Length: 313
Image 1 (cartoon, rainbow, N blue to C red):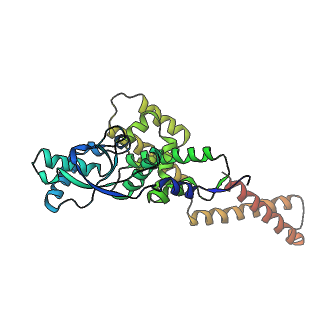
Image 2: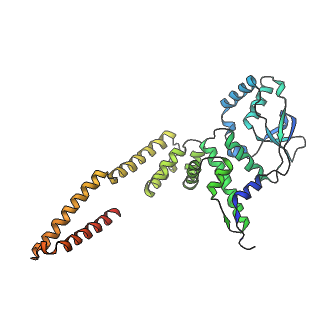
Image 3: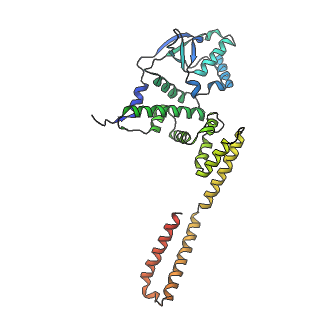
């Protein structure tokens, strides 16, 4: 069948389907390492305080969720963590630093995947619902998913219908469409030093909203401000955004008219057109009362035309 229509959601669901049932095994905690993509998307290693809090929780209440792992294809008897990276660090801390040998061997869920893309998409979909992500982590997730979806679209070479990219991401990750739309905007407008600051969590999606509201000249001014400063601080960025935001808000206020303003302007316009038309006709010696209906039509047409011009400004 030519021009076969393929629903992207079905393609992704197929890529996420496992070709082997889950298996539970007990493994040595030291045989489990982190997935390489983990540090590229998530910021687990940056917050030692949260890891220690989790270790304290496990020490007090036990391990509530099992780690999800896969077999390491390069090392026999070793495994790679897919879900539970912070738990893995907390467990190793309890074993090596506090001597809790009861966690030296733990039961884990082992999964097998068709390819690397499938396992990474599984990690992203799972992590999106496991905990509160930072805006930077969300953007890294979004970039990977969007790139993967684009690759699938290109490889099909067919008409792909049914679901937009942002809806596919929402369906697979559980993130709200409003957040995904903001991430899509961030992906388009952030680049260079500005993108680096976002990924380092120095600015967030609220700041992106402000950046997106700037005019072309203001955006150029802001980018220049960022790029030309070597030791720029978060405060410098926030202050500059506040300054530009005030300009946008003031401009909006100047152009925003209340219902009362519009009514008053409309009444003034009617009076002005009436006076002008009648004065012109009197100057020509025309009896206004004789052509009252025609004069009213002219006045109405002039008022409608004037309103159209004002609305395009």
